[in-house]
Image (tube, rainbow, N blue to C red; front, side):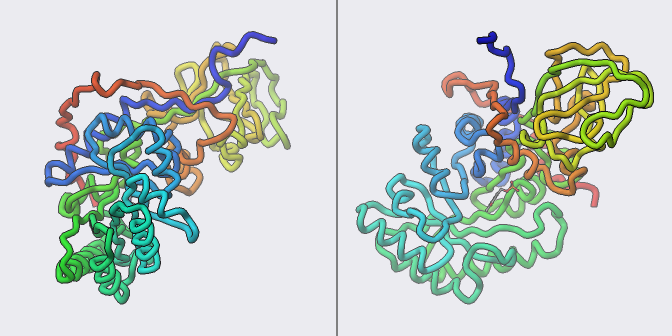
Length: 399
Ligand SMILES: *Cc1c(COP(=O)(O)O)cnc(C)c1O
């Protein structure tokens, strides 16, 4: 057996200090308007590792966690997390009772779901905590205007059901001055009044990352930031002093000189126009480096940007290093914090015509290791104050 490689061939490195820094910005922002913070850790913490991110976020001051599915919530419970967890999107046949049994808060969109939850509460002999969702114009989940009054009345009447909150989700939060936001807010306020008139006194929550950072007037009782927790700006072009927590990196597996005119990788779509050094990096589209980035991708290698040349293959790419001295085993960063001008997930997203959310959530791959840095026992983590968070709060960008 060969000696094990000192580093994985491909890995995402997750920086929990960055997560805590970002969370302090968000909780500072929310606290300034009297709101609590729920860190959203769905989709395995946007590809960063839900359990590790959840622990770091709780250390840094969030009071609750948000996920999509009950399975995701149960995984947090099994990991020892006893903070409030809200699971908000259920497919037919999913085990809502398991959520109630584990003390998971459940998003409820319809009377059918409410009945299922109430039945589970009766069987289990414990109260089900529900967050009623109103569709205020995203036209996705939640009860429409016509169904809302009956949902609210049914929830008020249901035995064993505690209505913790009403909530909704914005369609244009990443454009903080968009006029549709005001329409959704008016609808949300009406929905709240309907709930009050039915005898409920629920909390309210509406804001994702973008609204948390740019619209303090929409914080209500609780904010639900996701992407900003991971250090990626939710409003294109606005810098909130967040720090990206994920780095995708690999290492040089082979170095070779090629002569002018040599074609490189499948189809020879690139030819060397001079004698140059090529580095083979053992990461390809099976590891999350999109083939669509062929000809448009740079990596950070030997302290500078170098282009990936020729087609991106399933398992590998070739990097043109010019005459830089490059050795096997040298670190190659595909994206990360962007410090020094290195590529970022946002840059990939721009080139791909997508959003950085998709880039980072796509990095859960069987051949890509995940290395977590900055783990701390809770007792050793006194909460620091973060003046940056309050400074940046309310910035809507130059629109
Ligand atoms: C994913 C999600 C969020 C977090 O959104 P970000 O834009 O990542 O901050 C908040 N609320 C709901 C309902 C979501 O689905």
